[in-house]
Length: 523
Image (cartoon, rainbow, N blue to C red):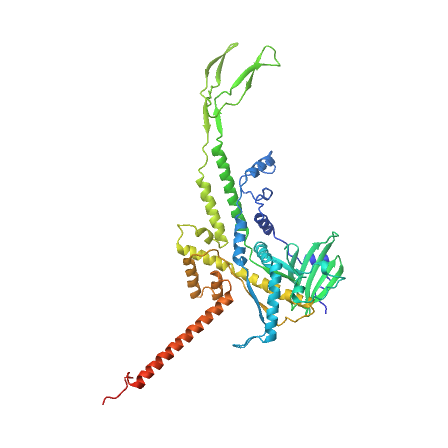
């Protein structure tokens, strides 16, 4: 059936890709360690571009430029918090199960086969590493794009041979993180149909676009070169595209970049101040430079002065001689005296100014990213309540990123499984399954006090039970919940048995007359 993407060309596909904002481009440069950025990121004093010698001055500033990559630090900490630990995942049935109902034998066999095959593929393809890179990209660009693909070498005559098993079929499939400048998933405004686009240059130096969209129940993968369609494949993928785009709130906005620039300027001035302290600059006034009198080659029989620098340093004695003051009396000029020489130098600015400024900016940057707990954890002055609140702020800031991660992992598990089933000649065999995903957030090493604080937050309803278990580093949340439920059932059963035994004992005493109910009538 007709779709909104039937007449796409490479140029039309490129127009569907979003433009990267300049602020994001600058954030990427900061993350990758380019804090000079051609001088654009320097906020200290600088000459006008039209000034004479401006290039030489900027070159000297760049030579003394010092930076500390706090932007990369906060990106890494946020990404590690969201996906530093491997997400917990499993397959479950799409159909609702009644209370106490378990999957039947056939369903359980599908679940076991899918999980075994996908676990092996997950490890072989380093899916966790790709997820970590994607989340790090998303918190800078605001989005990240991934695709599932089959290398061209395994396609024979435009056809992929049927694979003997699900595991063999998965071995054909690869997961790739794409550059946000080259790929994206957008929706047609008229139909709200989604379309994934990936534009690249092939070995023949030709621009190629891969587009993926839904046509009814089929997932279409179409290859474009210029105006021509050079390839098309239709796949049963349970409504999934072969690309996915996740979105996150960008972590490195203009305020963070402004503070990074201010921090770099502070460190540069600190380094410059140290140079001034160690290599004191002296100014001598009213003093003659040392000189030697030598024959003047241009005036035979005359002498000329050759000036030389002062001989200073350990064990040296330097004699300063003032400049002669001359007075002319007719044709005779005579020296009437000498000026009083002096040496002046300027003391450097105390380093405390720069150290305090550096600490203040760093603290503000961590606070901007909800990561102040990383600073307060080693601060003996900060109160315990401040550290706890900062830790909770960080945990809550990871929530939207964890939601995006959950969406991403579910797509990987379901789309890759459906694609492998098709290659194995078992199309739609696993359509009855869905992926359950639980991100496991990581806040770093927690003290017993911080664990108790998280427990109190859970008991007050501030965080969910699953989030609480994840934050205290429970490896398998579902298994732990099952153990907790089993322990509670066992505890209730023991209480019921104890109560039953106590009632039976009391009844026996009543029957034997050894105890009274308190209701007997007096004789």
